[in-house]
Length: 191
Image (cartoon, rainbow, N blue to C red; front, top):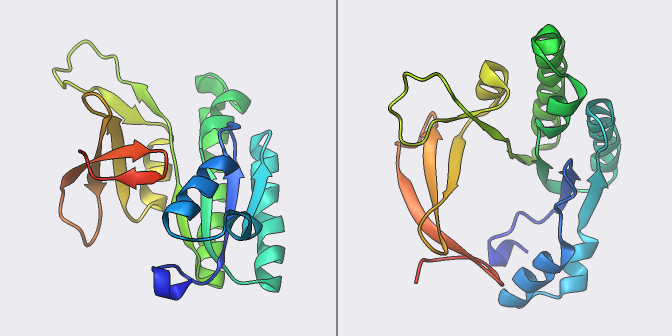
């Protein structure tokens, strides 16, 4: 609901790794005094099994959005299936081209239907022997995913239950970071 800070629309969740947990949404709904079943009724869930299927789900999403108001699309993770469908340097160009087409279709959904899009991504250790970076991880997908993103956030585990979110790149937000914790009822301040 708008009065609760919502966008007055449904959410679509495309899951490429099998990590979606509806019970987490019920716990978060209870925190905000919302009915868990009503919240779940407003979330369309799809499990993608390969990169072609992931793209086909966007076409199905467009049909759903033409019928009903959606406010959010989540793709978790955009690159996971590409890492298994395209292996080795010999397939790098094909992988990047297919990923670029997927991201362009996702951007088209955002533009056409006015939905916010959240995409998670994987990182890989950058092993070059010359790096003195204390956290030598880099995002999968290279420049293709970087240029398709408006604001990029970097999430990492801190000490204990603490997590850290850093604004990595944004056209309108300064570089900054904040600590938070993941609790049974959602995200909260570090205690």
